[in-house]
Amino acid sequence: MPHSKIDTTSAKPQTAQVIIVDDEEALRVSLSQWLDLSGYTICVHADAISALEDITPDFAGVILTDVKMPKLDGIAFTKSVLAIDRDIPVILMTGHGDVPMAVEAMKSGAYDFVEKPFEPNDILESLERAIEKRKLVIENRALRTQIAQQGTLDSRLIGNSPSMRALKAEIANIAPTEVPVLVSGETGTGKELVARAIHDLSTRNDRRFVAVNCAAIPESTAESELFGHEKGAFTGATNRRIGWIEHADNGTLFLDELSSMPLALQAKLLRVIEQREIVRLGSNTPVKVNFRLICATNEDLPTAVADKRFREDLLFRINTFELQIAPLRQRKDDLPLLFDIFAERAAENFDRPYEKPPAKLWGGLLAHEWSGNVRELKNLAERYVLLTGNAEERWARLFGNSIGNGAADPADKTGSLADQLRHFEQHIIRDALTRHNGNVKTVMDELDIPRRTLNEKMKKLNIRRDTIEER
Ligand SMILES: Nc1ncnc2c1ncn2[C@@H]1O[C@H](COP(=O)(O)OP(=O)(O)OP(=O)(O)O)[C@@H](O)[C@H]1O
Ligand SMILES: [Mg+2]
Image (cartoon, rainbow, N blue to C red; front, side, top):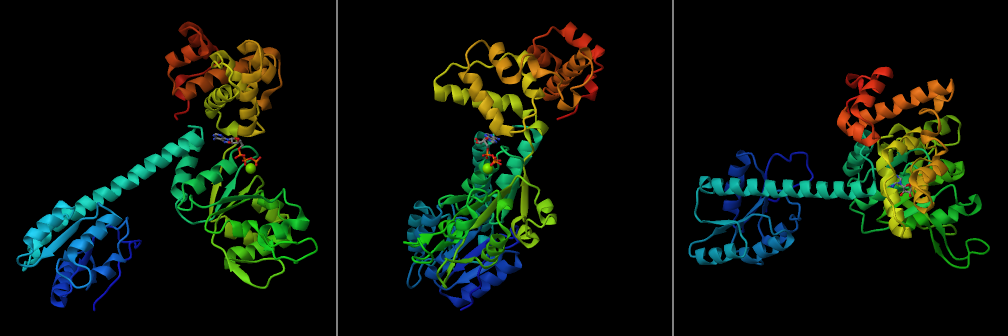
């Protein structure tokens, strides 16, 4: 029986796939030769049951099937295919007198039928239409998934700055794959949030996400925590314990603050990653484990390698794909949005009123250093909601007495008061113009100053609209 398998993941997505099912060998051969010459990727089956094994919901092609066949006939086969995916086009090849039956089959969802005997050219048009239809269905689905994922990501990872948008696009791209990901970023930038988002957008999202903070497990118990132990493995091991890695089987293993892991344990971890099996303490039997690895670090790992605190071979195993989250001070455009959303959520949680602080106060956010990144911002937004007093008073308690607490840039906290103020004003106006793509009217509204004042200030502070960065 001629039987070639379709590789649905193969690198030839342009050539449309056709599965031919017929118990008559002569027909299989002639049809497949002809379709092969026409540029299709062909897979032939002598019976419907074996054909079903090749059909998955993402099958990107079309099925041509005989009706009268032993084991499973073409009608029942069509029903099974449509149960897998009701949008797979099935074209029936009917024998003489089978037409009424084929018409019935079409009512229940078959795409078309052709009466035997036929010339290959007779089915070409129907086949091409069916292939086109299938292509559209697959494309639409991919698009819908992408949009849904974008929506999920946008509601979870707040921020529209160019670097946040790029990060979200990278997450959507990498999540469905199995590659190990290294997430790096300063404290509070959202590394764990990103790791969870990757898991939730992956095919493992119905399985566990196991987060292990490598800095928080004591060295003495780390091995047993990670790999587990058998009853009696050591004094006090009264029961078998399944370790974190085994716990993540079929799911995602998130190793946080990885650089804190002792070197000896790093060697053991490397072996687990390479061999995909663990051995519980007190046991000699390896246990297979299948996990997607995501690691996070707030330290530069190449530096840790240079300092001989981190194994280079381990680094190469985990950094197949690296996602770097920019610190908040490098994406200041995100500050107002983050503050506003966190404050709104806090207000809802604490059942407190919240009104967006007046625009003239926002400069305080920009001037702050944000060494604690988003975590610090979230905390301040929550405190803002809980504090009493008017907006200015609350703001002053959070950010100091004046708007912005001095100069805009921490590096510029020198010079006369007039110089610092000038610098700060320049920064606020530039920032507002950048955020609003140079739209003076919006900037006037936001900063609550008349056009003349804004024009004068821009002239005095040497700010030209055409020098504002395009975003
Ligand atoms: N872009 C964002 N949108 C919404 N919330 C965010 C964002 N980034 C971070 N957060 C929130 O900030 C807090 C800190 O994030 P997370 O714990 O993921 O940071 P981290 O990088 O793992 O920090 P650490 O290095 O200290 O462990 C969390 O409450 C998280 O939900
Ligand atoms: Mg963290």
